[in-house]
Amino acid sequence: MARQKLRKFAENKERANVIQAEKPFYDNCKGKWRSEYFKNDNPIVLELACGRGEYTTGLAKEYPNKNFIGIDMKGDRLWFGSNVAIENELDNVAFLRCQIQHLEEFFAKHEIDEIWIIHPDPRPKNKDAKRRLTHPRFLKIYKKLLKENGLMRLKTDSRSLFEYSVETVVHEKLNLEAITFDLYESDLKVEHHGISTRYERKFTQEGHKIHYMRFRFQ
Image (cartoon, rainbow, N blue to C red; front, top):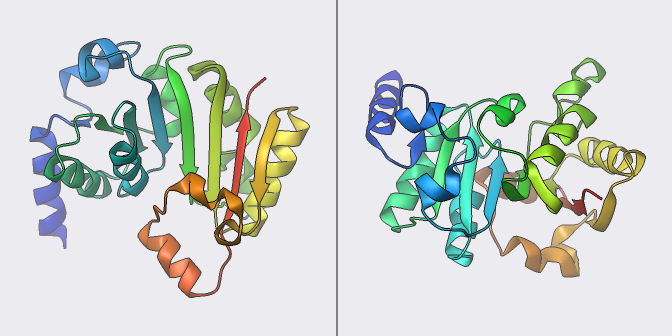
């Protein structure tokens, strides 16, 4: 297993679609994703804590006229998404290896059009609330980076995280556009384009319902 990880890390260093430390663009990407990486003016969509990048690559196939960036710290996971992008010749995909609390170091104000948060760690302990990706401290970061009226989406199997997120969005007076506690039995299911992560497939097989919400900053 360790040998496989080392191989993936080595390959990531050579891949143009994996942006990480020690690569020139890593230190100079802020405000330059359209002009220097994607070389177009298309909308930019982030998938936070993307894991293997199922949504980054899946959405990139659905929307070739948008640019997608998967964010995660796990290089071996990013390797999988990078591989799918290469195999499918998806030139509208990139993966950035960084911590989400440091997003402002890599993106300029209003550079992002849309953010997806897919099955994040629910951080169920109260002492870890500030680490939840829908905590107000993260929402403040997203608001700075998103264009005016920028769109946010959350999909999770965690009822507690979902309820916390709904309460936070309401408390912060954001525009909650759509919500369901059972995505697959809702008309909103079309919004996820049938894309699912390996963990989601496991959760649904175990009988867990998938929760989904869409909201905007006002």
